[in-house]
Image (tube, rainbow, N blue to C red; front, side, top):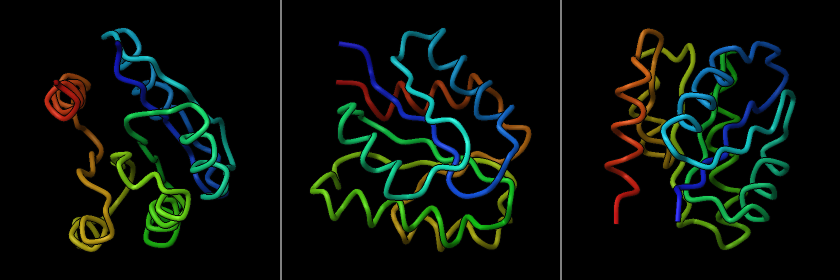
Length: 129
């Protein structure tokens, strides 16, 4: 059974090219990928993740609201009993925020310039049987 990944854009960030590139690369490597589209609330993202029975949720943020939105997605997943879903992130996220996001349950963070091969290798390792 292929790995199921939800790629999501929480908040009002209107830039989704990177999220779409990652979604396509994961799909092309054999994952089933669901892309939520823009302007999703943490509750919407968590609900879609549960409904679609995903293994992981990849969050993308360029707006600077990652310290609020990313942990909120984790909390929404937990409130639905879905704390087994792995949450990872990417976008323009300062190095100084990475540890706090990890402490909140979002790891790893893939920053600008991360190769698609590195992201796919992490997915393969994280979700291998």
